[in-house]
Length: 402
Image (tube, rainbow, N blue to C red; front, side, top):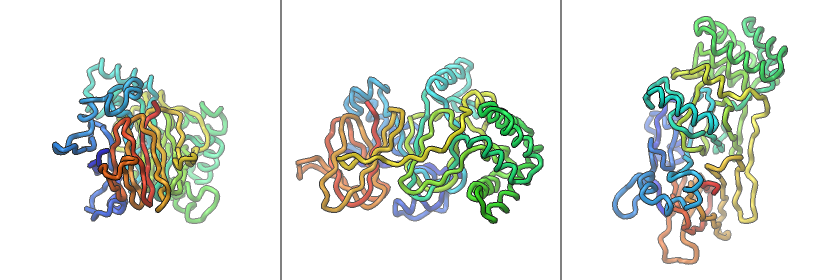
């Protein structure tokens, strides 16, 4: 087992306090958006096996079968197929969507063939992988996830009393679900920004007023008003109104599959995703928005946000079930004096302590080295290495299905 030294990413939307509070460090005054744990080449964790710190991606590349396990290498190749994060949103992230595996592969091959540099600002596909992801709330967490049913969105837009939104509400009522959502999103994102700015301003004022008055959409109106204040005049504000507004309580989660538009708004959580950088943005960003490609990727299906809660097993592991295999996320609640918890060891795993203290040790060998993890600290356990967890706190376990 190896203690991980991890990198904090200072994206502008990050909270200035949430990650420092978890880690017990002094805030710098600058945003601290994400703490990365894994082997992503953009900011790999580092481990020290006696010869100084080495990036985890280099350790894995030197002996992938030993580090990841043969089954994982055969399924996903010689790299860790997931990235684990602490994510701290102080302001809304961009409204975005991710491609499925076939779309990512085709899009990456096409842009490679056209000679578009991977770091070009108008590039859509940074790699050939998909990017399903899940967020588990550590604090109350707010976000947008998936399309709301059109008739409900029509009522929400009508309630704002903004004349220029009436055509969108009419379209949502008049057409079948998929066609209605497609037409409205296309119209909103295709409108001239200057022409849309007045609509966004009116909608912002109305949303703030209605949020203060209360009512069935008060929480959603408050969220849209906050988004609009962060991104004044952005057509993505109106696009965001098509999506479910959701509040997660600690321990609750959202799974975001391919084609599902979403945005995180505020809060601290544990995020896990397939190891990819493929993002198509819908708005709420100064970055490139490729509307035709976006509309090809988005799944125009309405439904509830689908809040997940962990399912407990007899051995004390609480699993957040998802339909993909690149990652598997679970949680252990450790109690003082309780029997040790013994995670399965077939593939590599990352253990993250988010509350209290946890000790990671080799079972049955009191003389073997052990690690003590405080809040925000994490450990990497290679495939086949047996460990047990004791202590008093909460530990998240990230691994793969192989």
